[in-house]
Image (cartoon, rainbow, N blue to C red; front, top):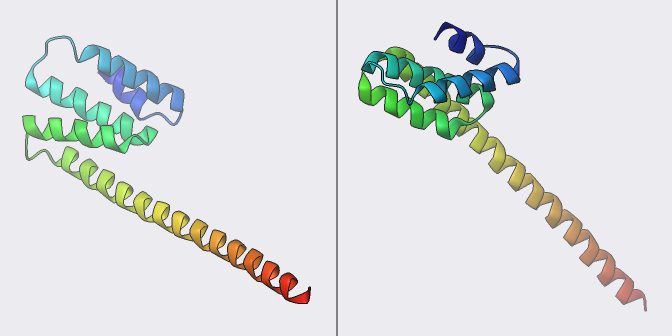
Amino acid sequence: MRLSWALVHSRQPEDVNRGIGMLEASLDRPSSPEQAREKLYLLAVGRYRTGDYTRSRQLLERCLEIQHDWRQAMTLQRLVEEKTRRDGMIGMAIITGAFGVVGLVAGGIIAAASSSSRRR
């Protein structure tokens, strides 16, 4: 567990992925509810750190099924929700901006075409 903890908290993406792999493999082995909760939480941390917010949220929900008032899991769940919401807003802004640029380009092409047809 200590090595898995260290790996999912590493700054190196390869280490984080290695920790995730170790934890996923260990979930199949029988353990106490507390150990299962810890493994699920560490997996959620690893998934959060790799940007897999959907999977992190699912793992946190499983943690909270085991212990519904676990503050660490609740705190990370709030971070996941904030990150998801913020990324969603950024995505919407990018899409809106892209449509604006496409609209400007299309408007410019239409204006150029109509002014050239008037000259003839």
